[in-house]
Image (cartoon, rainbow over all chains, first blue to last red; front, side):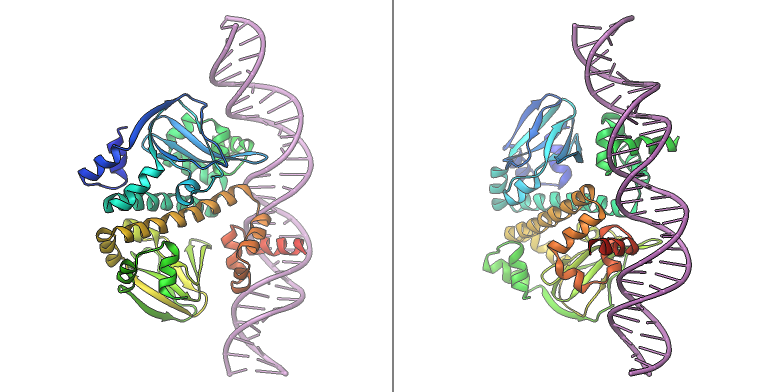
Length: 186
Length: 186
DNA sequence: TTCATTTTTTATCATTTGTTAAATTATTTC
DNA sequence: GAAATAATTTAACAAATGATAAAAAATGAA
């Protein structure tokens, strides 16, 4: 997936602003298993996924995956990006990845200089917010089995590309529970 | 809580932009019990709470409260605001309220004209996003009793101002379960 | 292919949360 | 303040999910 498509898909930018943003982006690749981002560190970049699959997770006694990112999506440590503070999450590459890298510092400059890019940044946060809000509500309304069916419906490819342990923790249940749910659906 | 404090607290605005925003805001009051916003309707305003307390909820067979707003906070139907589509939530006033009203249409104009206001809007969405993300993670990590303790710690005043049925549904459990949890904590 | 390792499933029992109904306590209205 | 109404707690049982362990299946490496 091309960088201009990714940027434009978030919010339609005038050509000059799009070019300005693209000028600050560089390409980089990492192998499967690479830890792109460690917890408790301020991350100074954001990334757009050209190709591949990643997960964001938090480690305590257990390890909880709370986000998957695939082609076209943005990898961002919200705490770093918004508050310049260390984030709680780590990012692991689940497949070999081709990424576009953008320095947060440069993006901030563009936010202050270009009203279109500022609105692009606003739209990005707003869309992420709606997605997160919908997940929260889904968690409040639905039991584990309903949430699994919802995920199968909305993101069938994830089930194929990601191992069940990660899916289970994303759904907020144990792997054993997910296995049981799958067995009951047969 | 004064409107300039509320606006400024989200993101420090230059005086001229602050005035510009304030010029589009009017005051309005509603009594306790008033339904400010109905589900499945495009809401054309956003509100800032000068005084009072509200909740956002969704109705299905049961009724689930997923947000409380108090002094200084912003009442917004994200679906309406971001996508111009009917929202799923209703907003009920839990106390008599004094609100500041701002037409989404006017705000959108300002976003396109004033880079500071665009960044103000960006910061607003980003901060809401972090709050929502933290709630989602709390839901994924903690059991009901831990979530109740967390709420008591972070928002002790809510427990006093809101009846337990609403608190319970906010926490994602039944009122009976919350009662049991409270009994066990004694 | 074969062996070793990892992932997924199955089974059993424990714990948490849900459901329903009734009892108690608090609040509102007259 | 008394009666009516609403909110909260308690109790008993049901359902969902967690924890642990072992078996089965899938994957990867030599």
